[in-house]
Length: 453
Image 1: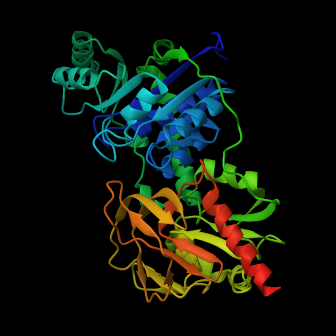
Image 2 (image 1 turned 90 degrees about the vertical axis):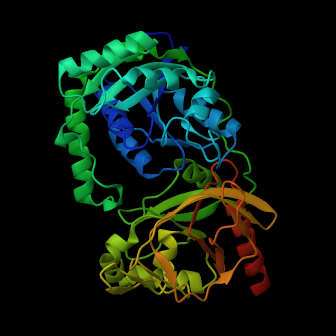
């Protein structure tokens, strides 16, 4: 366990000049190294990513939190950070894309998060084709923006001590401390992110994290990194998120299994403030939890588990009956696909789904859709992120009167749909700061029930 004062804790943001430099690899390795030491290490992720947070959680043994300055306010990010850091011994924040890459210039970037939290930055550099030329790169990242503190560097794909010596000399000449390196090793290679979170994939990721934790202390000065990044810890604020106005506690069912994994921890925490959350598996369970008042079907990889989802006819019938009976639900991305009539796989095979929504989705001719989204609906503005490969076909869904735009305010094709009391969209919405969107869906359900009586 750490032996320093509770008012100071190692806190740092792991960034890189660009995506693909190895920041996730180093982050997972460091999280597991500290967890092995018996430390309570709290992971965070800049941006809207829900895959990296999943693997952070597995590596650290603590839930990873998103810090996103587009989807939520700066005050919310600060409060989230302070609250979850308070019981921990250290914080590791993984950046997003390149250090200064934001939704608009550097707005919302990893650099903006580091400045907001006042924590030092460790830069991970892919050095496989560089030696002393890393000096001007580090100089530029250190001096480009005075609002951040770049204090150290870690190097990836370094195979010899002599290669690392060039990199150390470059660091010394620009005033950035060299903290070590990782050699190129197939055992450290993280597989494609779209392979899904199947049991086999999880076992593979666990083996990679273990291999990283075994090797990393031999070439990375972990103790020096921790000493260099000790920073005053912020005081935690109020633990209850704002916007909780439900007159009674609800019975909330949330899909969670290998097919439905794309959730924000803060969203789930907000649901727990609104009611009693019961998790269920559309893959393995036979029916919705008894007495469900609200159903949340998050995103995930239903296309990879389409056969198994189709085979669980009992669950499909249970959800179809719930929706047909006026049950309130929100289905996003993968959840939208599951509630449709069918999913067509990339090879052309079609699998019948729940059938609660008059639409079908296909992975044929898949095309990535990606970007931040702002949704104006029913006097509310809620933000989120769109990321999918599937295409919506045969769709007879009713569009809600919502205006959806990109981070720069440009209209986008995404829509908010409604069928009865079921609301659905391809957009992964963030209500961890203010749950008014979910509460409004419950109000609509209550109004509908009152009219029926």
